[in-house]
Image (tube, rainbow, N blue to C red; front, side):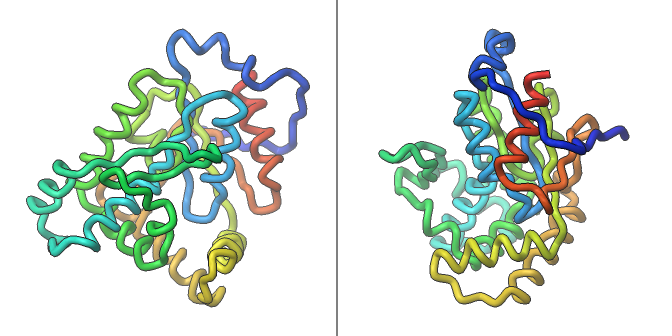
Length: 245
């Protein structure tokens, strides 16, 4: 496998939305994968906004499934029940009045509810289920039918959109990822300790990388970016510069 890692930050003055006009006819697809806390969501949202593309937060979709299951009486190991529940439910990505991404579960805005730690843990387990991944893959591929998307998650460039125009894989040290998640959760009122969050992320990494269904790993032709010592703006600059090449 051959990966490229950007060693420096690029600058440009052209309007970012003009960078991809040559791709518009075919509908450009950009994937951004990586482990928890690597900065995927924030970076993907900014890249999508600058390029005028639709942002697809697939991690939020799995959390929505977790919330759906948590509200039901279905056993998480009942694949037939899970398939039936998913088939009769809707999960959508939209934007609110402030142009922020919102997640709709059966037309209910659950953007805040799906961020609770217990929902994240359940979503990690459900992500190992073939029936869940297959159903969400269908929804995600349908959202990307016309292209012009930035799809962020853990298997976008490897399994869902293997023919994407540009693939990126963000990573960072475990300590840095735990610190970022700790700051994020504390800002929302959580009182979880840094050590506890680090342990949860470490377990999530193991589960994501060792699961039999679509395990987490960089796509063969992905650009790998270590975000440990980079700011969000620097990571965005790297991605936009690659798209412009």
